[in-house]
Amino acid sequence: MKIFAKSKYHLIFSVLPIVIIFGGLKFGAHLLGWEVIPKEMTSFFPSILTGIIFLLGFLLAGVVTDYKESEKIPNELAASLYTLWHEVEYVKQVSNSKYAENLKSKIKNFIPILKKDFFILRNDNLEKLLDSFSSDIVDMGKEGVPPNFIVRMKTEVTTLRKTINRISVIKNTDFVPSVFVSIKTIAILFLAVYCLLNVEPWWVGLILVSIFTFIIFSILFLIKDMDDPFEYDESDVVKSDEVSLEVLDNLQKEFNDK
Image (cartoon, rainbow, N blue to C red; front, side):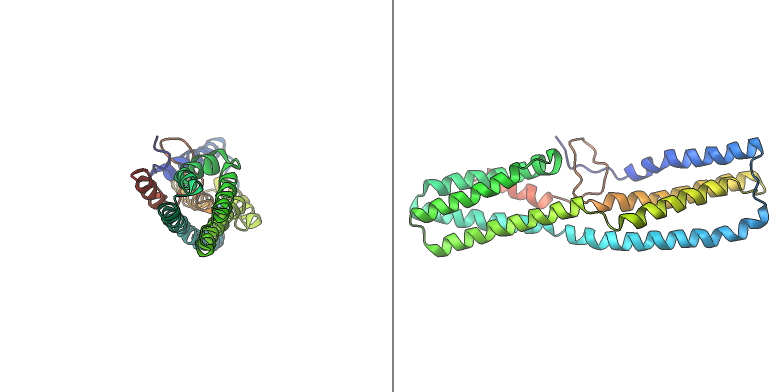
């Protein structure tokens, strides 16, 4: 099951139906004689389009910044899991703790639960798993494991918890949602009004409204996709531009080989 495969062209295919709709509206307005806005008003439209593109650029710049920060999260998770694994492995070899062996098996399950339960099913199994990490570490302390190992393991569990909380905040927080809704409304009004503009020859207006629609909605859809860089699903082709989890997949293979 390739739940993290990516489609390079899904954005284009998502925009094409909207381009066809506005192209059809422009063509229908021409056939019905509804192009009531005189062609002398054409000079005002480039200024409006420039304003729309400026606002879209502002939104895109903010989303890209958050997206670049999100790209670091899988590596942070992998680093914490790797450190915790080796700490537990050392404790197991030195003290032969049964709780250390139990914790190792739970660490192996962390990445599969993260990908399925946390990202896709959105239940609380991952939080419960982290709580069980802490319980096993406490039990290891009762067995006489040196305090410095206990502290280091608890630190890594805390780091994992903080990183998971960061992902939750990113997934549940929209970047300036009021501005996004406003710019979408302005863009639709702009394109609708342009469909009523009398352009000669008429087919030039059809081409222009199609190009404007493609540019505006491509950027809008890109912003929407990048606003949640962890929007995974179980389909073979993922419809959004997610952060790569390759580093976690490679770590899982390493765990499974041990």
